[in-house]
Image (cartoon, rainbow, N blue to C red):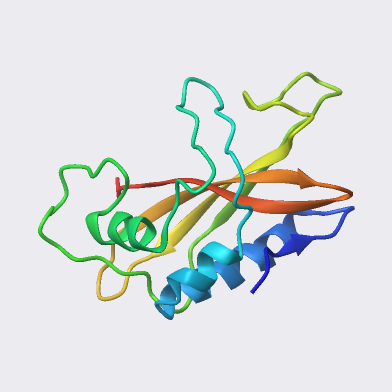
Length: 153
């Protein structure tokens, strides 16, 4: 499976469709395919976040991050083994870089077009996780780049 390309001009719905496809792969336990779906190069930092080198995300790290409830798990039941539900029902919020207004979201507008917050539904739990994905410019198109997974709030 190759990285999923979002053709330009892209809109919120095109991004949501791609995110839903990615979450379905997670829900089916297809972590290798879920990673292949994403851009896999160096991940540039934004705001005050650390840089993520190419190869940062592995199948094992992605699975373990979801099972633990995030890269930095919160206080919620640390013993629970979480997994993503196969049906994506949560919201996907897309924020676009707007160079006309100067709102870059803390991203380099030459590299990124936006930021996505995707709610990951958890199997057998009312709790959710949030995946932060960056919309990376890939030639004339866009690709999703996983930044992190955050614990339930």
